[in-house]
Length: 319
Image (tube, rainbow, N blue to C red; front, top):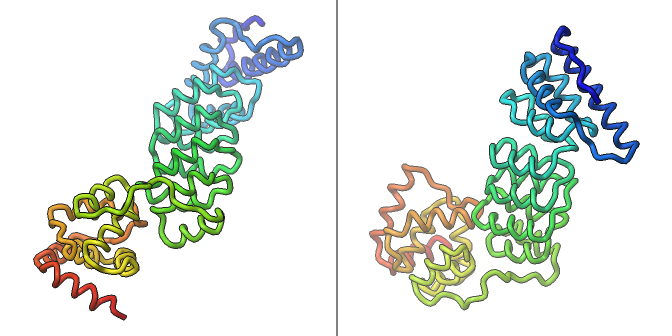
């Protein structure tokens, strides 16, 4: 295919002519069972022409190219780098290759989120999207029911969900969730999602943490840092002498008062409170919730002795 000299024509006309030639060339080469190929310089010239168009003139061209299975992959990859927001439509192009997609994922979180919406993605691209550790990107993958996520993807997403609350519901309810990933989630989701997992997977047991319950405050905090929320609750129960059901009930409250009382009753130093609060919120569906004014009040509860804190908890949850 020869590239015509069309410099005297309007840029939009030039673009349309060159795109038509690209389409004809692709059809002819496919009919002859030849690989798609365009003359040297053709793609670069066409890309420059499209990039130079005013946004209102370029957008119809970009919209057409987004659906064109005959478009040159290098052209689409080059146009995806255009700064105008309208170029994002090209991220759904069927001709984009993995190499281009992986480069685009690395350049922008917004591009990664849009790529996650494509109807087909290879395992390597799915892995790269999960590796961004971006909540919106992972959620887009989970909500994209055109995709068949591989087992390793569910394992990786479940690992992220242990500290990313927003992923727990879409992951728990995904129709293809694996049993192994469900077991990884079981100890960190709230009661509602836990019931969903137990209903979906008969006889499910958490497999991620197999160590015995912690025996002292140091072990209890260490297991919490590892993301083992069940062991943290077991440790608090042992340290305070309170029933596990009471500990679980206290930790399900919106207020941070029960958490502080539990820590005080367990003789855990107030210096650990900020880290404990952050980790508990991450593993406990955002509970407890606290603001700056409330924070000053609850910190004062650490002045209570362990027996006094335990007595207050018993008074609150005795009925």
